[in-house]
Image 1: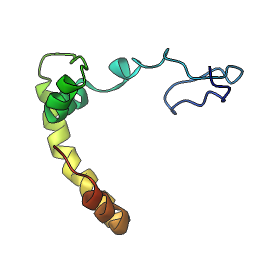
Image 2 (image 1 turned 45 degrees about the vertical axis):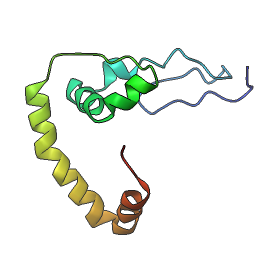
Image 3 (image 1 turned 60 degrees about the vertical axis):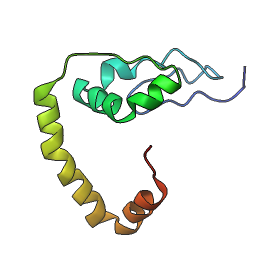
Length: 98
């Protein structure tokens, strides 16, 4: 195992004394991400998930969550462009969806 410090995401606490790479947090997102976010991601990248043998969660369509996402996401994107127009433009230039 690699002897590197375990530094995790801001939404999950890791034991600072442990080192190496651990798979014990690999499924934490299933309980942390809103159902609408998971559903939308699976719709956007579902074919690639299948090609790479990733399992879909197949939850029911969270209609209220999707409606909230559709209303708030355009405002989020607009805020990104207003605050960081150069960075946002660069992301769109280098990002290519299949």
